[in-house]
Image (spheres, each protein chain N blue to C red):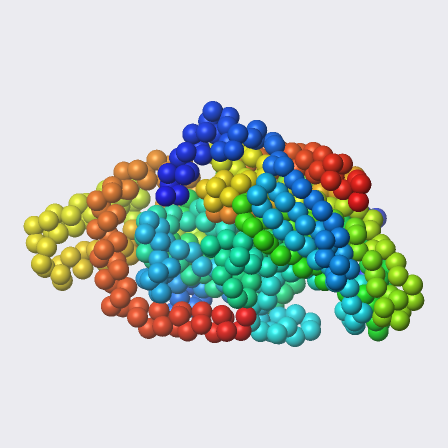
Length: 255
Length: 346
C-alpha cells in the first residue's frame, strides 16, 4: 500500500505537484481560535488543513528546579489521543509524541519566548509552573506545526492566576518572542512545506525548524529514516524562516 | 551549581580546556570489548565513557513487529544512574527516548536493512560517564560496533556538535560550554557528507547555522578518520593475506553453489546449513572489510548489484532464520524480557 502511495506522490512531485494541489511552499489553510476553554489559563484551537489540535495552558505555583532557583518552569506534554486517528492507542506517550512535545518545548524555551525570571514568586521556594498540554484531536498530518502554533497562541492569551492563589495581582504571560515551527519533508529530493498525512507517511526525511521574530533559529530536528544533504538543510532553513514570518503576520499579530 | 565561567574563550583564542575553537576532544576507541555481543565498542571522548553493544541481525520477537522486506533497527540510548553529578533515575526518560529515536534514524539511511527481512538489529548504547555530547559519542561508538558486528552499511556514521559560546561558534562542546552556551547543534554525517542526524537548540542566525554546519562537517571528517583507523588496527592484521577481489569472486561462488545444492537436494538440511552459515558469516565481515580497507564507497556500491541477486538473498534469509531459531534462542528471551520491563516502567 505505502509503496503504491509513495510512487504516486513521487510521480506527482516530478510534475511539480502535490496530492492536494498545493505548491511545494504552500501551507494548508489555517484556522485559529483562542480562549476556547474557560477553565484553562490560556487556550487555543488550531486547524491546519484537516489536522486539529487543542492546546491548554494551566499555571500553578510550585517549587523551582534547584539549578534555576529564580525562574519559572515550563512543562510541555503532547497526547496523541486515540480519537484522533485509528493508528493511535491509549497509554503512555510513545517516542513520536515525546519527540513532538520536546521539539515544541525546546522552541519555546530556547528562544526565551517566556521571560522566566518574571515567573518567580519567592526565589528558591516558589515559582509559577506553566503546563502546556497539547491535545491532538484529528491527525491529518503535521501535528508538529499545529502544536507549535497552538502552544504559542495559547501562551499569548494566558493570564497568570495570581489573585486566585493569593500571590498578588494577575498578570499577562511575560512573552518576548513568538517562535514558530515549520516542518518540511524531503520527497525524492524535493522539499515540501507542511506535509499532509500521506506525504508524511511516505517521506524519507522530515525536518522541523523553529524560528523567531528576528529571523534567528531556536530549534531544529531532523526525523525520519532518510538523510539530508547540506544544501537541503540550508534551503529548509531559508524556507522555514520565510513561512514562519508569514504565519506570524497572518495569525498571531491580532491576538 | 552556578559555576558559570566569566569567559569561555581567552585572549589567545583558547577554550577553558585549552582547545582551539575548531578542535575536538581526545578520543580513545576500543573494539570488540564484549564477548557475548556480535559487535561492541568502548569509546572515550573527553570525559565521556560510552559502551555500545550490537546484537543481530537476529530473529525479531514478537513476530508481528517483523518487517517483511527489511530488518528492524532498535537503538537504546541509556544513561547509567551514576553517569552524572546528581544521580538520575534509571530507566528510560523522555530525553533518552527522544535521543534513541533520532539516533536510530541516524543509522536507518546507512544500514542495508533490506538484506535481512524479518530480522532485528539491536544497538544498545550505554553512557557510563557523561560529559557533554553523549548522543554524538554514542553514535560514533555505535557506528564502530555495527562495523564490528559485520552489519553491511553504506558508510560509517560520525557525529559531533557545534555550539556557540561568547557569541562564537565552537566545535565539540565541553560540559561548561554545553550547560551555559547559547546554542547546541549535534549533527551526524555519512562519509559523503549526508546529514543523518540534525538537532538544534539555542539561538543561531541562518548565517551562523551555515558556518556551524561547515564546522560539523570538518569535525565529522576527522572523527571518521579515527573510526577507520581504529577498525583498521583491529582487523587489518587478521585478514591481511586475503586479497579482496579474489574473495568477492569466492563469495559469489558460495552463493551459486548454495543455490545448486538447494535445487538438487532440497531435503539435505545439514549440507545446506553449513554452506549458508559460511555465507552469512563471511559475507558481512568481508563487506565491512572492503569498506574499512579501501574506504571507497563508490567501489563498494558498484559491487553491490552483482551480489544482490534476488534469488540468493531469499535463500540466505531462509537459512539464516533457521540458524537464529536454533542458535540464539537464549538471547532472544533476554531481549523480550528487557522490552517488557521498559514498558512497565513507562
